[in-house]
Length: 237
Image (cartoon, rainbow, N blue to C red; front, side, top):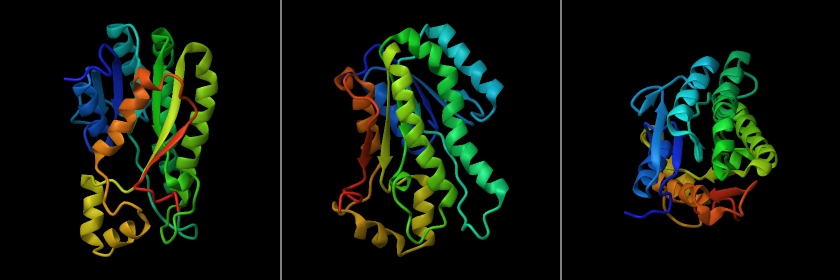
């Protein structure tokens, strides 16, 4: 048992599956007290786009622990379509599922992170925050992830006087239950991903979780406002 996060109180959203679950599992291994949050299947069930429910959840967590040292905003959902056929409703659902979901949890956690005095927010951007996603109907997704990237830099500025750091991780293609379904439905997808990767492998949730562990730890006490690609070199060409 390592102790890189020993004694820290961490809230991880989207903790039932994928990257969120990977972060929650490794944070526990590293000594943190982890509260995993998801629609279902986590330590706390919560609809994180319900403002009242989200506020109530973080109030309970803060009252129980007295502070929140780490917030990982891994929960997200998006709908994909081209501009010509993307409905306004689906555009709004995607921005809600990628931007509002981060805002509501962060705002609710903020006073408890101020109480920590040395807190870390970890959000998830994407290569799509900086680059068009060629061949993919990802307009709303690109807008959402671009918003997360910009919002996190602002959070870094607003949090600095309170000892709150904020950074983003930009994952490459990560094997999860959701992405494996896409691989099965499109046999050519893996080859397309690997064509972009310098390292000829697909990522796993743990690859992201180890970066998140460093950002959450005191080892990264001088790091804020950064964006960290963990993508097998796909965006470094």
